[in-house]
Amino acid sequence: MVLFFLGFAGCVTEYMPKTEENQDLLVVEGLITDQPGQNKIIISRSLPLGIRSEARPVTGASVSVSDNQGSVTYFRELGKGNYEPSDPNFRGVVGRIYKLRIRSYSVSQLFRTYESFPMELKPVPPIDSLYYEKVRISGPDIYNNTVDGCQIYVNTHDPSNKCRYLRWKTAETWEIRLPYSVQNHTCWVTDNTENINVKSTSSLSDAVVTRHPLTFISNHSDRLRVKYSGLVSQYSISEDEYNFWEKLQNLVEETGGLYDIIPSNIPGNIFCVDDPSEKILGYFSVSAVSTKRIFVKDQFKGQFTPYTNDACVADTLFNGEFIPDLNVNVWILRDNQTPPYKVITYSKECADCTTRGTTREPDFWKDDKPVILQKNP
Image 1: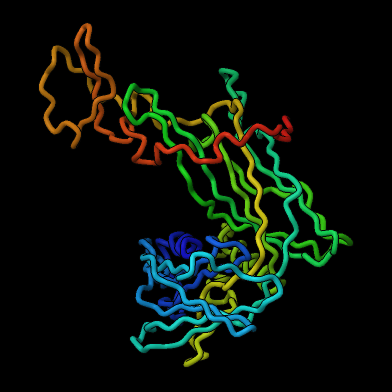
Image 2 (image 1 turned 180 degrees about the vertical axis):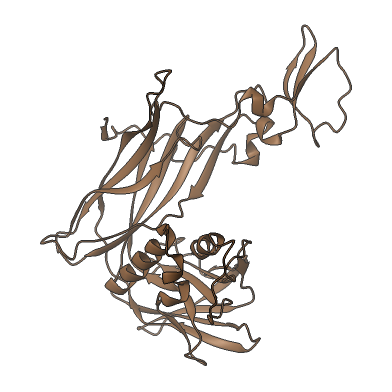
C-alpha cells in the first residue's frame, strides 16, 4: 500500500501546494484470511509530498489480532515493517469478527494504541475461470512488425447473491533464460502486482462477474518470453472497503487535478485510541480467499529482452588475456577453447540470472497440463 502513496507523492516535482496536512502519518496494510500463510500486517510511515524515497518501515511495534470469541493472536516482526502471526498455522474463521490492535510510537514519539473497527470475515465464492487474450499494442509499422501484449480476465459468480464486492491480487511468476552459456542461465522470478483491482455487482440483479480484466502484461518486460504464471487471489470485501480501494485507485490513476484528493482524505478503518484526531492511512482487510492459477506459454510478437548483445557484450579477449576484477566488475559470457577467446560483460545480470530470481524451479511449474481457455484476436 505504501507504494500507492509514494506513487502519488512522486508525481509532484515542480509545484508544491500549501497544505496543513500532517505528511508523517501511520500507514497500515493488514490482511486476515481463512488460509494459513496469507495473513500479514505491514506498518510504515507516509512521506511528505514531492519526496521520492524508500518506504519508512515501522519496527518494534506490538501487533495483535483478536476475535469475538475471545481469541488473541500475537504477531512477530519479520523486519522492514512486516509482521506475521507467531503461530504459522493461524487462520481466520468465516463468520467471526476480527479487530487489529497496534502499539507503537507516534510521530511525536508518544507510545500510542491504534485499533481497527471490528471486521467480519466473509465467505468468498470460487473463481470460475481465468483466461487470456492477445492484445495488439501497436503495428504493423513500415516493416510490417506488430507488438503483442497479454490481457488476463476472470469470471466468477456467487449463487447466494451475497458477495457483491470483490477484490483481486495476483502473484506473478515467470521463467527467464539467458542467451549465453553460463552456469546460472535459467531462473524463475516471482513478484506481486501492485495494481488495485476491485469490482462491485451491487447494481446488477445477480452477483456475476464476467470478463473482468485482472492483469495486463505489456512488451516492456520479459514476462512473456518463455513462460508465465499468475496465482490470482479473490477476496470478498465490504462496501466500505470497496469504496476505500476505489477512491485510492482513482487517486493513483488520476492524470490531472492531483490536488483535488489527498491520501488522508480517503477514510480507512483504523484509528488512534489515544488521539482520535490523528489520521491513519490504510485498511485492515478481513476475508476468506479463493485462488486459481493460470499459465501463459505462447508466442507474443515484439517482446522485450534485456539480454541483447548491445546491452551485455562488452569485449572479446583473445589468447587467454588476463582479466582484472574478474567476477567482481567483469563476468564471462562465453569461454571458447578453440580458438581461445572469451566474451566478457560488465553487467552481472547478463551472466548470472540469480541477480533477478532463483534457479529452483517452482513446484507448480509443470502443472499447466490442463487446456487453458484462450481467445485470440
